[in-house]
Length: 250
Image (cartoon, rainbow, N blue to C red; front, side, top):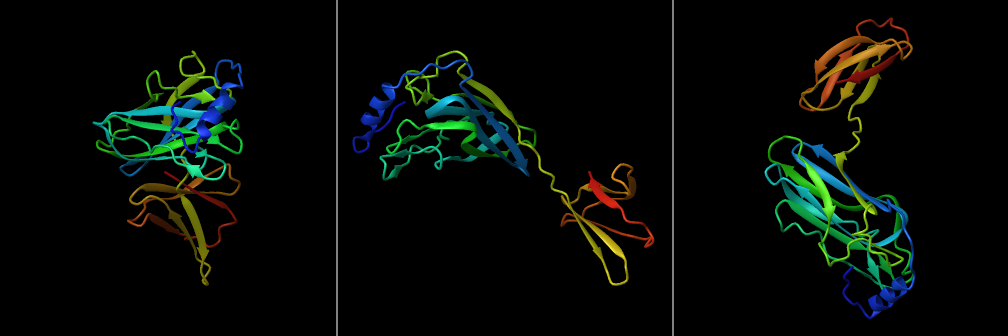
C-alpha cells in the first residue's frame, strides 16, 4: 500500500498497523460485481465481502472488451473508503480509465481517530463504472488484482498483505444484477361502475393481463402491447364479476 504523507499522520499509522500482527485463514476477501443494463448503458457495481478481519486498502482492475462497450465514467465510494488525520478527510486517487479495456479502482481507509478500524462487512461497495454498449450483446467483464508487484493492494488492519497468499483474495467475476420488476398495476372504477386496469411498464412491449379468484387459478383477460408511454389498459366488460386478483406478465 503506497500512501502520500499528509501532516505526518501516515508514518504513525503505518507503525501502528505494523505492530499489530494477525493470522488469517483462506477466504479473507471475496471480490465480485453486478452488471445492470438500461437501454444502451451498462452499470457495473463492484463489491467486497470482507470476511475475516478489516481491510485498510484494496486495488482492483475491471477488465472489459473495448469492441463491445466504451467506458463512460467510474466513481469511487468515498463515503466508506477515505483517509483522515482525525479532523479532515483527504481523497485518494480517482478511478483510472486511461487504458482501453480496463478500469483501475483503488481505495483505502486510514482514520486518525481509529487507525486500526479499517473496513469490514459484506457487500461493501468499492466503486461503480458505467459503459455504453456498442453491439447490443451482453458484454463480458472480468476482475483481477489492481496493481502488479511490488504494490500492495489488499492490506489488513493487522498489516498482512493478502495479494500473494493463495486463496485470501478471491475474484468471483461479474454477474447480472438482480432484476426488479418494472411492471405496475393501477385500478380505477368510475362513477358508472366500469373498472379500468392500467398496466404501467415498458413501452411497446407485449403484456398479458390475468385474473384469479384465489391467486392460484389464473385466466387471461387481455393480451396487448404497451403504447409509447408504456401503458396498456383493459376495461372490464362484465360488471357483474366477483371480487378477484389481477396480475400482468410479459
